[in-house]
Image (cartoon, rainbow, N blue to C red; front, side):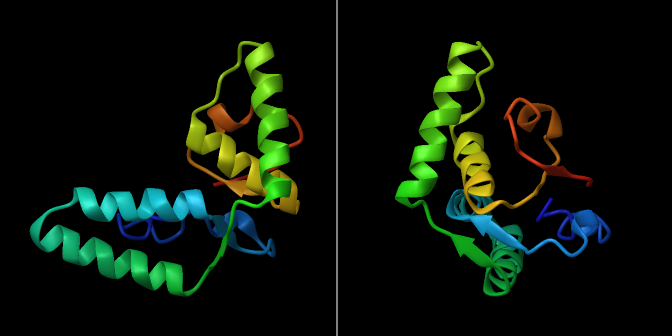
Length: 121
């Protein structure tokens, strides 16, 4: 949902209300991956957008507490046969560790994570 304004959807993600805004370093990597995949003028435009976005939001690192929560939800979901993508697991673990709600366009995937608060898009 962070890239929604780049795509012309200025209202997306605003439903987080008064929630603190931060992102996982995994999300930083995903955003920069999008920059590197783009070519020509699109890359230049996307890089400017992403760099502007990153300048205004805290990126939360993967720490030992995040890794502990990650391992727990990874094991729990695996045992239940409810696999979640590797990046999404780290993002969910970061949100859970810091008590943050998650704004996502992939709510169906993240609904599997017990205790994770999903915020309306």
